[in-house]
Every structure is written in structure tokens, then in C-alpha cells.
Image 1 (tube, rainbow, N blue to C red):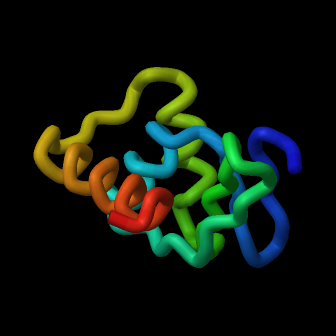
Image 2 (cartoon, one colour; image 1 turned 180 degrees about the horizontal axis):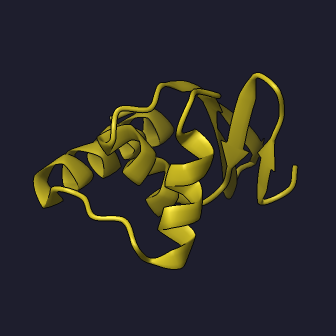
Length: 83
């Protein structure tokens, strides 16, 4: 799996902070794919504005409410590690 890939129906990334940002901004996580024990891919349903959010994240021009970001990180880690 590439680090990031956009297809017609899903967007996939292995970047945990990006995945948490997308969740905190209301994007729908479709699944988590385990590529090996140390890597996971986060698959999102492609929606209007998703590409803009990803580009803003990479440019460093996105703002996010800190508590929402923290909660999204915790949610992802709980799904990854089962606690």
C-alpha cells in the first residue's frame, strides 16, 4: 500500500496524525487495514472536500480543535490496540 492513495471510493493513508485530523473534522473512517504488525492503513470514504482537507493538512494550513484531535487519536489507538 502506498503511504497515501486516493481512489474513486476510498482514501487511504498510513499517517496516524492525518487520520486523526480527518476524523476530528468529521470524515468517515471506513476501515483499518493491517499491512503488517507495525503498519496500518486508515481507509476513509471519499467525500466532497476530503482532498482539500488533505492538501491543507500537508501545507500546514489547517486548524483543528485540540480536544477533538486528542479524542480522535485515542479512538484510533483504541481500534488499533483493542483497549
